Every structure is written in structure tokens, then in C-alpha cells.
Length: 114
Image (cartoon, rainbow, N blue to C red):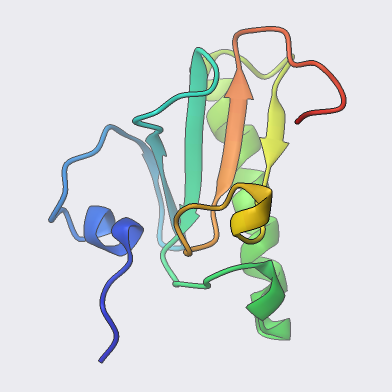
């Protein structure tokens, strides 16, 4: 059996986190190293290491993550201006290899990101 990811350990309450949302397919926590005043991670309960390795059957799940992100943004009061980011691979900034969506808000977010 493979070792649990950090997010699986958080999901199982082995590691504390500030949960802001949960449903049967995903959960959301505040990032412990925020890149913006509002920085929330939306994480599927199903471990998928990165976009590259998603199965066709995971399409609906990833759509659900985006839907949940919109719901969370509204609940947290930043629905008018936020960025949604999914990093894919270490070179793109992915540090936990369990697919997750970043919601960033609360400061000016320049373009292009980098």
C-alpha cells in the first residue's frame, strides 16, 4: 500500500487544518503558506497525483472542484475577484502530488503570473 499524501492525512484528521468546506467529493482548507490574503485549497477526496494522470472518469470530479470553488468564494466573500490555479508538476510549482485547486484573492493579481 502506498503512503498517504499530505492531503489524505489532513482529510483523515491526522494533521490539523482550517477546513472551510466539505462534501462527499472534496474538501477545502486554508493554505498554511498563503500567497494572497485569501488562499484556499480545494482538494478531491480521491487521490489523483496530477492532471496528467487523471482518468476520463475524473472529468466530472474536476468540474465539481471548480463548482465548489465558486461556492466557497461566495461564502468567503470574495466572489467578485479571485484567481483559480492548478499547478501540474514540480516545474509548475506543484509541491503536493495530490491534485488541488488554489483559490487566491484579496490583493491585486498581476498577469501573467510567474
